[in-house]
Image (cartoon, rainbow over all chains, first blue to last red; front, side, top):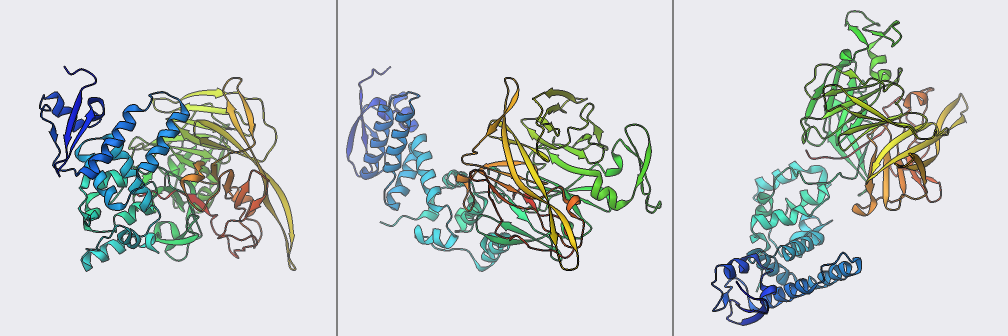
Length: 156
Length: 392
């Protein structure tokens, strides 16, 4: 059994070490399993997460662990506002955050980042979405025809 | 370092698309690239009720649908609904309920083109017999008092049913129930999916102003604003009543389920005379609406001065309440209405559709953008109808 106040070391893919409170680390289900399996003593390597992203993730977990668990509406709104600012990052960082949240199994962060992407693409045409996210239109001509035919009315 | 959004894992793409609440956004998501397209199903099942389209009169085999969000008219090929001998007696959960000059009752989803039949008109308990060869008297019916009368194919199509409502989307719930309000006798009838005939709901006569389904129960209202609650989930329907103080004003009553509240919407009509050079005619025109909410302790109706963000869609469709902030192109605290007392307005060669947007804050009525006032149809077309586009 671990006592509260214990520190956990997290190691990013570019070999930087981050020391965090255990409670903060436990926000990640992935890390939680490692700790429970007693494999955390020499630090936990996270080969899929760069230091830049890990720093952000830790920032998120810290804030949410420290947030008071009350039904207080103002506290709730404040946290939401903090979350909204937290995701005001460039698209590449957002992309990495989604993948990190998924890999580390941090539900709150995953929900937040997915919602953010959804909010960005609302009201956009497929072409606008591609331009925003620097994506190629990789449909074959047949597939393109399929797409058009399927939803003719949505693209008029 | 460039990131490649096409490489997002399918489960993440599913999560992102799960946050899209508007059907067009979902469709466009699937049109971005191959991986995005293949990661989410063609038919979304998670969408909340969409902003209704206004179904306009047909043109050949196509139906035009006016979309408030984009201020555009969309065309869908809908031969089953485009023939002038069809009449719609309801629109519920994205499905149209279509009658024609035959006993059959067709349910049709204009987007998915899915179809279902309900038990035919000839299977109502008060229909003694149906015979195609009895020209002009194909249906033989019986009044509650026992007296007999006949009706022809058109009369049955146009006057027998006032409105039909479904309890759920047939694609999502195979145990759905259909409720019908009968015009002349004010009775309520129901059938479950798979039944061979309709049954009357005992004790429900005259609760025939409007009917809605809410949380598995059927709510019906009479002219005085009294409510009947019916549970048809068992072998025989169980009926109970909410006796509110009598509302004595207004011409038409509608029930709407809005959030957690039951609303009564009272529609006031005025008779207008219009003089044309060669003929004068009378039409009914909506002057105003009043909205009340049911207060269960009492019980009584309490006047509602503002709907805040909510907007109501009423007419021949199943009454609907939505939040304006979930969509674009629409306003909260408004009632989007079409006419559904069509028969009364069918007199004369010219008629106007009584449709528009009633604003609760100042009592004014704004015409719908696709229907400027004084928009005449020289022949008798079916009245426009709200329908929520539903992909499944």
